[in-house]
Length: 343
Image (cartoon, rainbow, N blue to C red; front, side, top):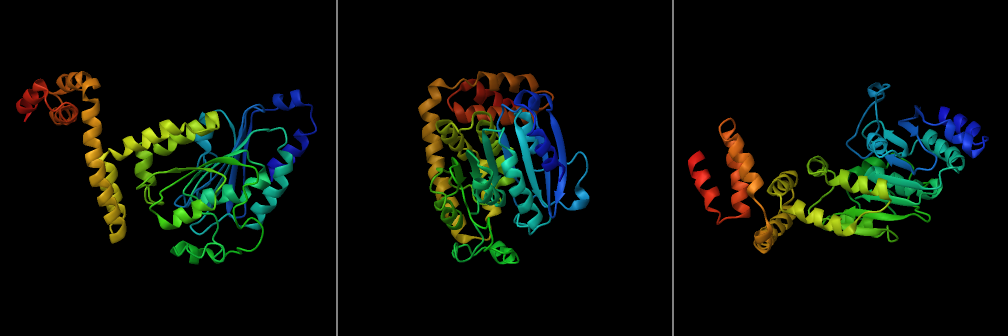
């Protein structure tokens, strides 16, 4: 556990000398969890990230260039970071080596006065479970699990709960313990289990995204930059612009691909499909009203210019651009004329 030895020595230095010893990077294996760290500036926040389900690496995947979930994002924001990557499919950050490491680490972090936590699902559980131990100030959690202790969450009847019973859910850090941490929890209120878990995070600001689902949505929400932009705002400013967040989620709902992918991901759930269908129909009307309301201020000329520029080499792409322009301005005669020509 090289980091513990380094920090123990580093703390004995005067504060001005501590900064001269940075940056420092490294990694270590803690049982079935890999930790990677990078300290760059004592005056910048220290971010903890824990990996979500689906990032199921094995020990043979680890090398000098390997980065745990969230590590590179933190580096790009120029903050200090300690990232924990679980190894294997069934792993809930319960290994005694990890717990011992965190208990030894916590008192060695006193120079970092601003500490953040970021996690999704299983990673959100870990942030919540270790928040008080690590004295986190702010957290950002996407649809986190609060615990897999069946006595505390009897309504969590997902298969992952039964699989997780191989671990001890009575020992320390088995349940959320936020301490004084504030921040945000983002989840889909139509998911009954996520909604119940979220309710247990009462001290956080709740941001709801209808249709977001749980776990199956990660790839296509990442495609739209949803996670990344919210995380960047949080890491950079330690807060989320709630007005911008609501606008972003509203824009997301206007994307037809969003609903096609959601329906595909939830094909086996009749109840879920009915909810999505109802939401989709409502939002089709909302989209039409939104576009009509702002048509007078929409400038479609850039779309037309790009379409005309590439109509010879890429006619199909030009048609798609013109169709978007036609949706925004259905009465534009030039767009209608060019579409007829290209078709």
